[in-house]
Each structure stands twice: as structure tokens, then as C-alpha cells.
Amino acid sequence: MEQDRDEKVGIGSIKTIEGIVKEKGLASPAIIIIGEVVKQRVTLNAISEKIIVTPISA
Image (cartoon, rainbow, N blue to C red):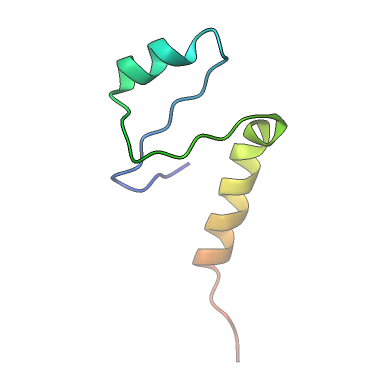
């Protein structure tokens, strides 16, 4: 799973997220995603990479 060079990702629970933010050096601006959609991250990344890489035929 390839990330943008400037992208930093921290995944955790409400109990652990503060430590993860500090450990990874996350800061604003940031996007925080909460809920079941977080579990779909790997699938969504794979789909978006396939769309970006697949050329559109004429």
C-alpha cells in the first residue's frame, strides 16, 4: 500500500490515539476519520490505486 510522501497515517482507538499521534508526529492540518469506514482503508486504497494506474481506453 503506497502512500503519498507527505501522508502520515495513525490508526488507533480512542484509548490509544493520543499516543499514536505523538509517536508519529501527526499535526494539523489533519483529517480524522472515525467509525467503521476506517476498517475499509486497505480495500479503498487498493481500489483507488487500480483506478489511477489503469489507463482509460478510447
